[in-house]
Image 1 (cartoon, rainbow, N blue to C red):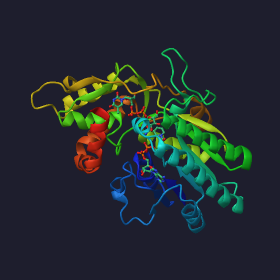
Image 2: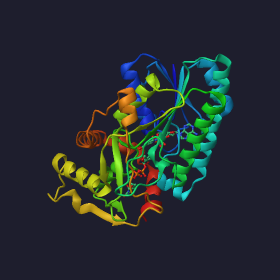
Image 3: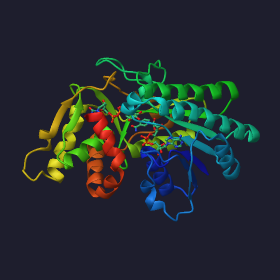
Image 4: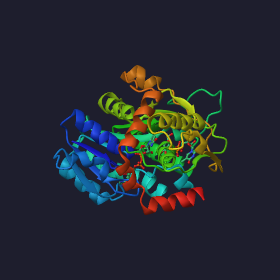
Length: 348
Ligand code: NAD
Ligand code: DAU
């Protein structure tokens, strides 16, 4: 059995669905169901005995210890986190609680569980981000596994702290850990506070498409199912104590990303007035401390573990826009009252 945390969120739910579409090995899914967690993502698993859902926090040590004792998983995959940079700027406390203290408590429970069994095949796979490396200039080489950590936002600082704890538990106690640092994901079940789903949703409702600053910031985009396949590969063959950068070699400016979405919507669901959705693009106040560029050098995971992404940005973004057009009900369900409050606070 796998023990997944945060498996009702964007990447975690894609991973659970992807895993159970290829394997009969069951998944224990612990999720606190914050605003970002949504059991609707896992509706297709209703009644499926291979998926055991538990509502709770990674910071609840006794609960995690009991789950480990009862289910005896062979691996823990830690997706649970507060994940949105803008929210961390408005209020960092939850990021410290979950990303740092929560990961610490999960590590403590994992250490006790692993120490009692000393099972060499046990793995603690920590899912992290490229944001821990800080910002790149236009001509800098892409982030590689030895790039110095220089986190710039409360979110990335909290993820960096959790990465350090994971590393220390390997170095000090020998816990068989693996860490992945992945670039920006996109795809189905992406919460519409993040750039790509926000823009698709706003476009369809005739609202402005907000680009921070000059829109020339660069992100390196990876289709979420490619991230899932990378995690499967790292879990299977990664070397304990080693870290793996995951990315799709898809650097794009934010403006180019938003223009691609507009062009796809023009083709798939044209505006009633026949004008392009590009008319809705609006430049708004920049994010404080906004990192200019991220780019991942994914050569280690490619050469050592033989992983490569399947999707280009063009194929992945077409699938993504198509998914949002076909899943308007999912979008309606997650864009409830509290979501509207967030939009008012952030884009007022
Ligand atoms: P998300 O915000 O969509 O989902 C996070 C999930 O964690 C939610 O289901 C939430 O309910 C749950 N959660 C929050 N606090 C919890 C707690 N204390 N205990 C248990 N569950 C809790 O995030 P995501 O985009 O799916 O990201 C998942 C992981 O991947 C995060 O660790 C994030 O840092 C990392 N990551 C994300 C991206 C990206 O582009 N989204 C890229 C690289 C890495
Ligand atoms: O790089 C990996 C990270 O990618 C993950 O660790 C984070 O969990 C995930 O949220 C994501 O962080 P970003 O800050 O890069 O994602 P976001 O979708 O918030 O923003 C992408 C880019 O678009 C960024 O440069 C900010 C910009 N942006 C974002 C929003 C929400 C806008 O210009 N306008 C917006 O309204």
